[in-house]
Image (cartoon, rainbow, N blue to C red; front, side, top):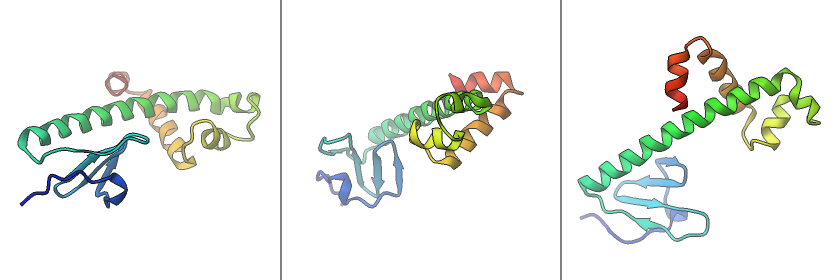
Length: 125
């Protein structure tokens, strides 16, 4: 039988973690900073809602990554030095709170999508 008790996210061992959503078997908990967890029932409608939310958040994250990559590409041409940073990596770590690898990936995404304007518009939407 499925448990429908409320479980705080810190007790879950996440199989999937996206923007504060943790999924572990029948326990689903959405957490915001300082708020208690909300338990969703494991019904077909709840699963479809979670799927729609996850897809929406993934699209939003892809658009954000593209936009940040475009900005990092411009700043990588010398703008980060004008802002007082020793490198683009230092800028990404301090200002964007992203890892160097993430920043490089985002910048690469922006560079590669320049050749495909329709695809770029689709990711940005």
